[in-house]
Amino acid sequence: MLLNAVIIEDERKGLVNLKQMLNLHCPDVEVIGDADGVNTGCALFQRPDIKPDVAFLDINLGDGKVFQMIERIQPIDFDIIFVTAYDHFAMKACEYSSIGYILKPIDPDRLIEAVSRVRPRQLARTDERLEVLRQYQNQPNSFEKMSIGGVDGIHFVKIRDIIRFEAEDNYTHIFLKNGQRITASKTIKLYEDMLAPFNFYRVHKRHVINMNYMKKFVKGEGGYLVMDDDMRIEVSRRRRAAFMTQLRMLQEL
Image 1 (cartoon, rainbow, N blue to C red):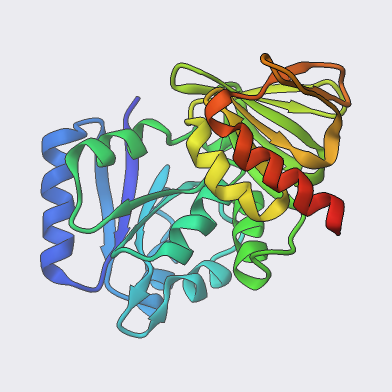
Image 2: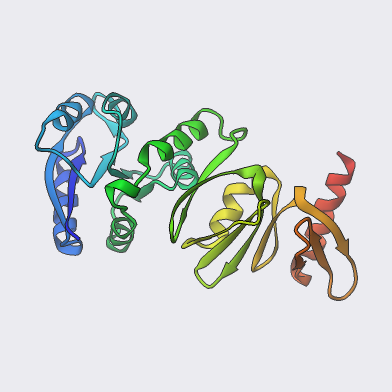
């Protein structure tokens, strides 16, 4: 499938480099326009001939942040890939909202992977993902909802409704309290890191649990947890001491 793309990048060298890398590594991407700032970007998107499937956006532009441009060109029905220097906060926000990002200097494999995740316009749900991103930017430790890029589409779920995560190779199954299961093509380590501030804990190499849904911990050689959905989750021997410390901390609250 041929993808029409635009690039918003204020450094000429960065623009040329991204175009060359797309041409070399992503032949299905055709760049139909580019701009170097917030104002020129808005003008580009106002053109009737510019209807991209994906936009590669540098976050820090000469005349402001790219988010200022995004606010002015609503609604957005194309996918977005942010291109940025290392920024821990921006990366976390992208992960929570399932918006693609590429770090500078651009790694070809990461570029190919990000392009492979671009969704057709009718399935992109970019406005909703941007809302999750804005929510994280405003209140990174108190917001309620996150976006999960499942193999069957994008799901928006309340964090408090997630019971547990289970790893299977490079996929992760997410189990919700309503019985729904979502399968995402991301590793369980990513979700472990993202949700640690929200009372999620890694009890086994295959399992991350929401500690709010623990029903019982059965001690012994083969110690395991019983969750509110009655699933038995093994607690690995290597992680048990740290987990018991976590339990004691909960009891003291």
